[in-house]
Image 1: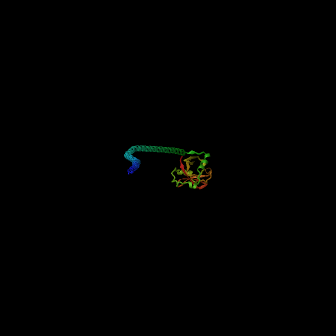
Image 2: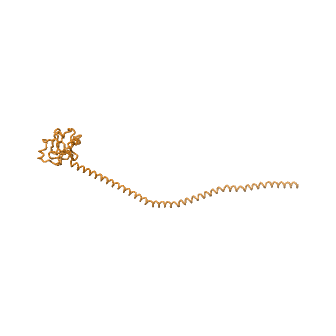
Image 3: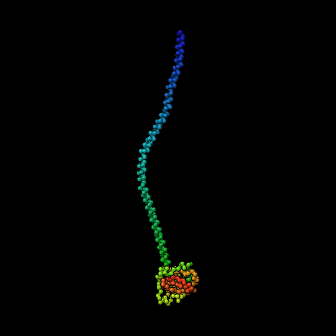
Length: 258
């Protein structure tokens, strides 16, 4: 019986020796697991910490930005207020300069217009003086002068003294009129002095100058002033020149003493 007991005891010890390491290994494995979980949890925590730090940083930046924004706005307003008077002043200066330039141009334009008008008046006065002084026409120039005063449509171009508002020129005394003028006292113009006066031809006869106020009819002969008999008649409204070859036509004339 002792041997069996010894054997049983030995077997028991062997079993215990084999089981103990197994349990020890399991314990070691169980003890090793928590560190792995700790290692896995550590990056998550670090990420959370970093996120929190970033949030705090963002929050601080926002707070700084909010705090700085009023200051920036205030500075911008101050700069704008400071710049506004300068801009207004510059605009006023530019507007004043433009107005001055415009006024200067207007003055120069007005002066130029006045100078042109003065020159025109001077030329006109000179022309009037020269025309009123009378320019003698030589016999060889009479044809050219008369042709320049030929009508294109005498019926529409001529006007009698009534249409002109009445005769206001010199009136020939009755005794001299009866002795040299009227339908019974005809003459030919080319025999008497002729000149241009006021831009129109005039001739001298019976001690007076007679200036034509109308062009002569275009259907009269080219040399009527050489070959046609003419005469001066005073009617109820003024003096007229008649051509015996065309008794129905009359040309308004005015009388000059000299």
